Length: 251
Image (tube, rainbow, N blue to C red):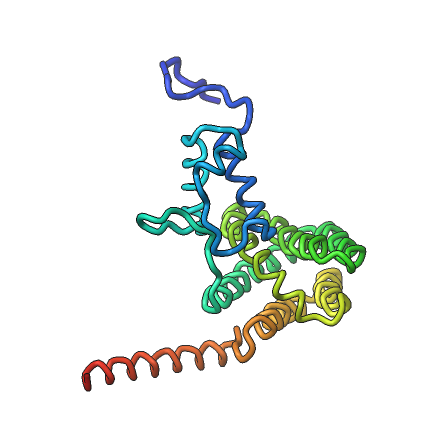
């Protein structure tokens, strides 16, 4: 082991606690995720600084973190706003999640499948226990997918999923209103666990794909994550673009 050279590093200090900016960012992130700060909400520096009882410096640093994460948007001369999730955003979230979680699930099959299944099973049990509490149900649902991604052992997959899961939580309030009860959601998650325990990777991947496809169908009727659905979307977009160019030429 090579010892650290004895040189002066004036900009490096011992890390003893979470920075003020990080604390503020975490609390704002949670508020966005749970809907306490709804989409489109404008964040006023004066009001937030008073609420957090901090100066504007760490507050601005925290909000810039959330801008870089894509959770806040900046409008010139107006300030910062919580992002609005348009239909195209919702589709993109689930499209990207499908890719990330598919990779995570494949990794889980190459690790300790029983340990992963036990963690996922606890999340499903929490979902069942929270059947009458929509907020707690959504949190348990999200923990299932977070646990699956963490089980991959991939730092990059975990990092990629962090903002995706926050955006997903923003979608869940609308999604849960499309279910008659909690049984369908429990069944979808339980099927993935059973396939994992049975070492049936093909079935687990198919069930995960169907789970994502079902969510997109509920949130965006008529849209699909399948190859055919994506091809139809691309064809429609090219047709609309061509129509727009034709109208410009005629104008």
